[in-house]
Amino acid sequence: MAVRNQSGVTLTPDDLNDLDKQIVEYLDTEGRASPTLFMRAENIDTSRQWVSSRFTRLAEHDHIHDLYETGIYELVEDPREVDDE
Image (tube, rainbow, N blue to C red):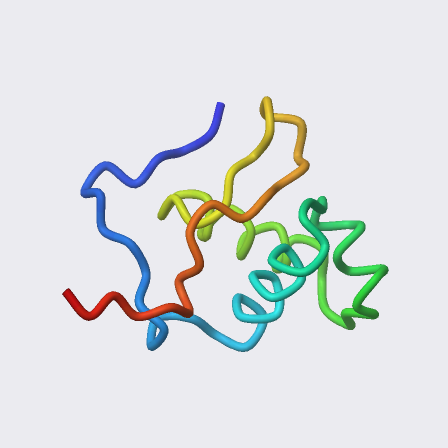
């Protein structure tokens, strides 16, 4: 079962590390991916656990969504975009 951010707080562009930005960019461009597919497509040289934890963090803050809890994610709200309201 997916862990949810109970506070409703979303991430700001300053909260994102380089990997987060790369994940969001990939999902924005390609539509959907699993952590493993993302790693292979982007030739990521780090642990799968670290990549999965970044996907989980983005999902906890409602920026990406795990489709039917299958491990396939899609972009919901781009945290790189600043809301000027």
